[in-house]
Length: 332
Ligand SMILES: *[C@@H]1O[C@H](CO)[C@@H](O)[C@H](O)[C@H]1NC(C)=O
Ligand SMILES: *[C@@H]1O[C@H](CO)[C@@H](O)[C@H](O)[C@H]1NC(C)=O
Ligand SMILES: *[C@@H]1O[C@H](CO)[C@@H](O)[C@H](O)[C@H]1NC(C)=O
Ligand SMILES: *[C@@H]1O[C@H](CO)[C@@H](O)[C@H](O)[C@H]1NC(C)=O
Image (cartoon, rainbow, N blue to C red; front, top):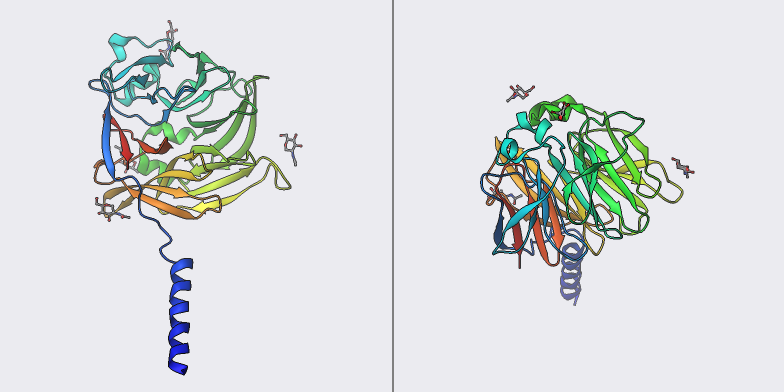
């Protein structure tokens, strides 16, 4: 009798432990890998976006173009450029950092569905916008008439028409990850741009290498990845804590872009260098800051720079990078 009740207690404790503490990390639901091949001699699809009709993905590449995927038969075609000085002869297929000040380097992309316009954060040309048929972008007014140091990522509130974006800090112009991480820089800033009033407002300064931004599903806060501090910061937009920030989650590795899912979780692209090897992971984090799914992309991304973005769209993950010649697609 007693043994049975002890056994029952042991079993109960085991089940309780299983349900509550392990495994905290679910298996990856996206095992099948395929590639969307970029145009010849191009690399670096850092981030992706889909338009309001589901067209794309669109992506900014290292030679300064924004290209649009048109399906497997056509592949990617030119969509927009961020630099007025860019010529195809000078820039197409040239991926080196030395030409990017002339050719442009678009990183963050986001469509504003109401107008169909595409907003872009270009490292050298700032926050810019282009209409639904593409072409040369228009510059958005900067903050207090001064150029930004290095714009990386953005996210758009579709309800209010506000673009949230981050300036990573001038140290990012060096392009040297080791130097950036070792710098301990805290000059990064979070801004918002109101599309209707055309006003740029500084929301938060003192950020340590901000390179990703995502708005929460209920619009109450914005998450910012701090690549140098290796954590995710939360800036409150609403409620009692409005205009203040706190740490949402710490990250084991360098977090890059962060993208919200339809259900309100967030995918974070993480590069983690251990024993001189870079591991590339995508982690899905819930609204409590807990990791609920981990996908390991290391086998498909054998490069020192790892991955830059994991975005879930219609049951697939779209994975970005700085040095591959494809967008990785992971499905079921
Ligand atoms: C772009 O071209 C204009 C002239 O067309 C020139 O004044 C300007 O310096 C150029 N800018 C860059 C970044 O090359
Ligand atoms: C990057 O920065 C580190 C630390 O400052 C330095 O040792 C290294 O030589 C730099 N690498 C390049 C390619 O400049
Ligand atoms: C937050 O800051 C904005 C201006 O930047 C201000 O209008 C608003 O009242 C502030 N909210 C709180 C709760 O302090
Ligand atoms: C990811 O996969 C690589 C091999 O491709 C492996 O060496 C590494 O341990 C894995 N990391 C995690 C966290 O699963």
